[in-house]
Length: 53
Image (cartoon, rainbow, N blue to C red):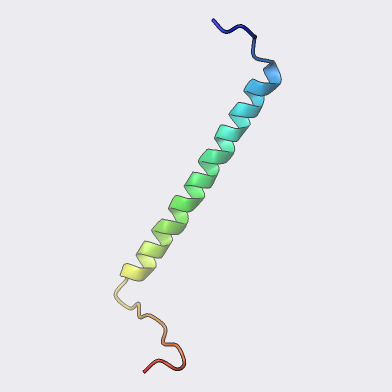
């Protein structure tokens, strides 16, 4: 048992933070997956930069 009761606004804020964290993690996974699909596709070649021979 805690000495101080958690206020209702803190529990709502924690829930919102968890939701935003999950959305951010999902976005990172999506970008990583799209990058991996693009890099591992058969027709992908790395761009050539000027000055490199």
